[in-house]
Image (cartoon, rainbow, N blue to C red; front, side, top):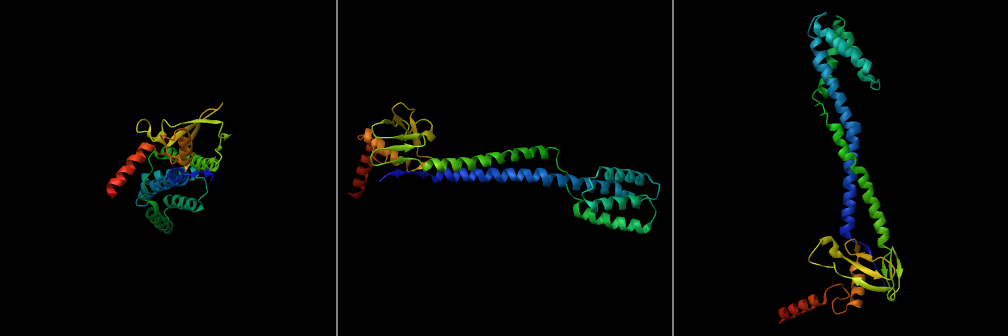
Length: 261
């Protein structure tokens, strides 16, 4: 029966989780950059205008310095406004009329509007000047998220390619080779206790006129069965068909016998 592989859970779980985390952080950064922080800047600016200029002007007589300052500040706000918020523009016009006249009805209407506005966003904290630039640290996570999903898709496709047939034919993404063309397998790093731990899940197949083919059991589930078949073929005294060292199995068998006795 032919041996095939699939993506190992340890690999695809990590890849999917990293992809989701990067996308979530990236989207969070985009939303903050485009919506949340600009709205906070807008609301805090409106609150400052009303708290620092408009409100003091309502408690002084016509001609007072506070009214002149409020009138200037409101006029500047009207000129700089983009006109997208009709309600806010109407509020600014109302404030300008209230501070520029002695109409008590207009003043009461403006004071009621001011009270409602300060209740709504009067306590909004102005964002730091670093808040917008900092969002780029999250935004740049977005392409990495798409990269992880792309890597998952590409690796999953490769996983379905690996195959070792009963006649000794090995098929990989790099090509297919029959039993005669496979000359050896390099087991130097397989389950080694020294060196880089990640490489201890790998072995290399030696092929005529081709660079060594890497077989990675960390990424591909059941790859150890292919590695074991080849290792047992070339080094039957050292490796079992399950890619375990023969001497290790002998020791384990002796220990099991001792326990049974």
